[in-house]
Image 1 (cartoon, rainbow over the protein chains, first blue to last red):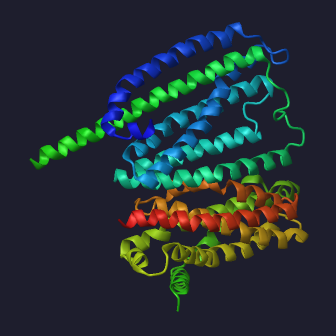
Image 2 (image 1 turned 180 degrees about the vertical axis):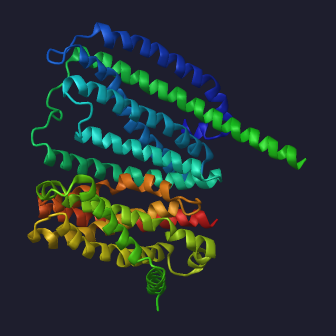
Image 3 (image 1 turned 30 degrees about the vertical axis):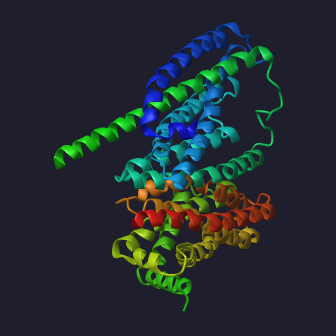
Length: 240
Length: 216
């Protein structure tokens, strides 16, 4: 499948129908997930209605991490096989991952106000997510700072892989740090298992986010390929 | 003389002659001075919260030295010579990192003693703080090599380096600050040593891969 799509012409043919298809699937899934999560699912017995922000917050957290892992895979392919589409994929995924991370931080902050009584808590998970968001920003800034696209792609790939190696270390240190500073942790890590009536809408929302990511990624990649084609055509025009 | 030793001595001599040793030290002390100015001179408040803040000053001082680390080599052709050398580029990058640590990290660690005392750290903790700064700056340099290498061709890349490198400074700062606060000192020192070794192991390899691209 991947090696079949590695051919840019085949990728463009595939993505021309796959991108709208994924987008439609994402809209349908989110159209089911949002009402289910916001109205049809039960309120939490402790948190009441505010628990519903979880359905927006948690999938954003999952996929902001998942997208960085995806970028790591694409970066690896880019460095080993020097494949242009892998560069385009890693570059196209970064702003989406950064947006998910920002969404996670913002909704986490809004969720924190009624439940923890503060807009920002230096909780281990929030801090890790903030670090991930800054890593995303650095990655995107490096891409835009280097003019030569091939060089930018491979330098960004090196940075992404170093980031991927470092993320578990950062996660571990932040956990160590937050437990040291907060003996009474507010959130139990994996303490309470989620009730099945909440798991349904949560997984639906997560599926919707993933489909949305796939659609946006394909659109970003198509835009990059088109931009390169326009530039190539313009250079040809100057030459001829 | 081996290529490693030659690179090490050249960089150390260049930094010594070019004010590369004194300037970061001055920066470090200046940044430390900002802490009581911002926090107020209250001794009890400083004793409770001040000592870990030497880590912010140390991180910024190392950060400020990174921008020119490979840029000069890229501009004057030294990088091409390093690539032509039979010695592996990774070893030469490691030599440059070692020189940077000797010129900047080690003096910063020693200057950490008066800085921490001024911020009301208990005297018994000073040797541990100096040791932690020596280890932590080694970790900063290891990560900094990567940041400096991927941005070597970017003009005025200082802000970009800071944005790229600062998140990776988080683990050394966390454990270094724990030492400065006197919390779990032995464990934090051991993990700091691990951070330093990890950064020294990965940093030169990733930085050398980036520099090969920069020279193309």
